[in-house]
Amino acid sequence: MSVSGSTAGSGSRTSRTSFEFGRTHVVRPKGKHEATIVWLHGLGDKGSSWSQLFESLPLPNVKWICPTAPTRPVAAFGGFPCTAWFDVGDISEDAPDDLDGLDFSAAHIANLLSTEPSDVKLCVGGFSMGSAAALYSATCHAFKQYGNGSPYPLNLSAVVGLSGWLPCSRTLRNRMQGMNDAGRRAAALPILLCHGTGDDVVAYQHGEKSARILSSSGFQNLTFRNYQGLGHYTIPEETDEVCRWLAANLSLGGT
Image (tube, rainbow, N blue to C red; front, side, top):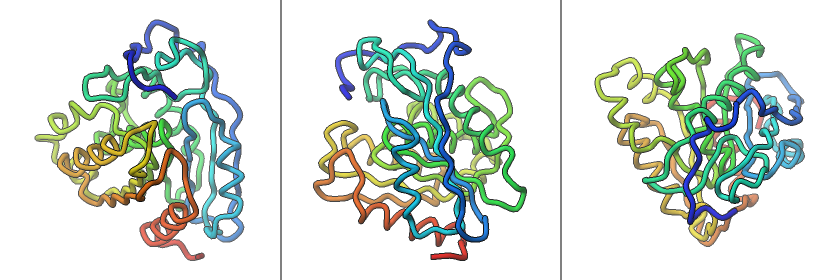
């Protein structure tokens, strides 16, 4: 994925209704169902890539839902279509955010979780662009609304982001100021961010800066882990960390 030399489109040039989500893959819990996690793949990938990994994780009380993003034009590829949760051109502070696309995906994630049992903890996680979409859902949870002002229906219990970045980072701190309820929800939400120092797709500095902005905006229950030399992929050491963190923060019965 090239993420330089172009800017993200607005997302409004193509009707959002023309984007259809791909196949959703589900990994059912092997023990008592205590948490459901929607996990979002990276740009150009699909849900099945991750569902295969989750089959083998030592988290028997977790149900994993791995949707596939719509195939849509992506500015980073010169408008060439691929699976993407939203449009992106350049990962930088100055690049415009595709709010339409982010809201569209956040609403789809919320819809996937809306039918889960009331006693089950609801979580969102992802890799790369999927991590960005997951962090956007975390901000929707805090504000109790999407970027377009529509009510956000979920109470999230945890968010995990691997090798990603924070969309709408320029405006987050200002939006949080003076919103006491949003501040309380942000402070109570556990977030785990992991990033490799050798990432040549989403530079380590973007992950580190995203963690700083989230923390300074009120997301105080945030853990940031770096992995020396790790590129834009995951390794067993990282997935082990995710499992330990989820088991602890969700008070899961199985190990």
